[in-house]
Amino acid sequence: MNHKVTILIPPALSNSSCSHPRYATSGPPITWGSVTEATIVLLLTVGICGANILVIIVINTRRYSKYIHSQPRYLLTCLASNDLAVGLLVTSVACLPALLRCWPYSDIICQIQVSLSCPRGT
Image 1 (cartoon, rainbow, N blue to C red):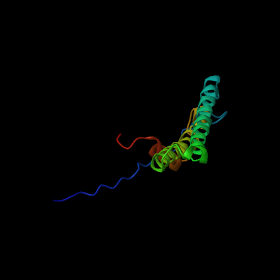
Image 2: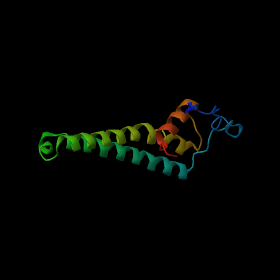
Image 3: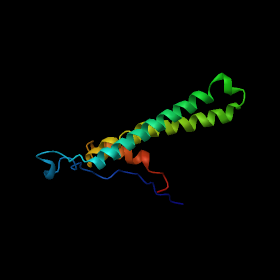
């Protein structure tokens, strides 16, 4: 049987959303709606990070380690650290675009965030 090798190459992107000519004089407009949305994203980021750090600390303390066997404790720690990484790498990057209503980062950051935030099946 012949198997084709598929190489995934990201599409070529050019970031021009914040450097669009309509923002040439005053920059992207900041409205109350965008400030509210950025505040909600920031609160979600802090909540995600704080809750997962709390889970990691509580599960791995000596006080609770006698109630949880090592395999479920290891699994829960891995899940919480993965969720913590998503909270730090994905939701924290989304705060500034929510405020400015454009993408202020480079093309590489866009590709990294899309690859981290999208599930593999879609």
